[in-house]
Length: 388
Ligand code: DNO
Image (cartoon, rainbow, N blue to C red):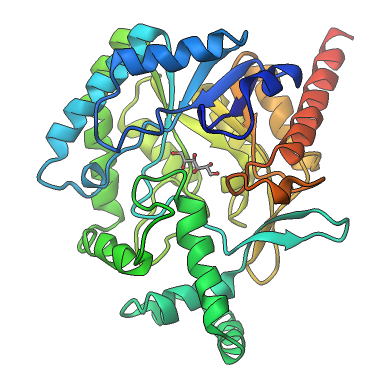
């Protein structure tokens, strides 16, 4: 696989020069300054591309070319936004940037409740506490009918939590679930939002009446509309699985399991309609056998996210080590079946002072560098076995 790294552009505290030194071959990035739905011009694309190439690397993957909410819920302006998307894709294709990661998660991108959960070794990591998430849903968002979405065990844990809740803890939950995890990946929220919960409710309202089937149809509509451009420029679209792979806040999610993946691949049976194999997101659902999924979908995978989660008996989940035996098998699968596919690590621990720098959540420097070294080591071992 090609060793890539998610870099957040010229304002990233990690420089391209640093990445070159640690063995990164390709960059995963986006035109972060362009609002969702607007066209990425050839000029802006070329500017960023030259910057990357001047450091001896290539722009391997766009993560993300965001799909506007209106395309997801089929708003009145979706066709105009799809046309804009097609122009951006063509401009990327002309520049030779041909792997595009996107997601089709309504309102909320990835979700975590804790960003610095302490590990026994002094590092910290991301953590998803199911009871805290339910607390946010029921007591902060106050979503009508929210209780019905949660199982009895989680509700009991949530009640215990509610007994010791303070306004500071509530503010931290809002910050973690909405601001810090969404701010840098989704155009829906930003650091400066004064009323993130209100904004959240407005976005949720847009999806009234959109169930799983409707959302699937909207994804199919979008993919069918853009496939001609993808064919013309040989662009691979790679949907990111839903993280966590379950319905949240009453919103449907459609890339959560084997059946979902099979559905969207079959619905638009074109090789350019593919998957970002995020082993981390898929493994956050106890229903997924991530190694079996990697083997099954390797040929339709155009981008790999190498990380893995452990689901605890109560439904919480945490990020596991990049040397987890399941990840070793996932890496082996892609290194064997899809040798040149771009791969990046993420959600590595905060360590050795990472916590003082203010990196985007999940995107530390030392933690990711160590993780990339681990995954690189697995790749080297797989290749050494092959030549025996
Ligand atoms: C989180 C990321 C996601 C991902 C998007 C792709 O760390 O994996 O935010 O970039 O869902 O569109």
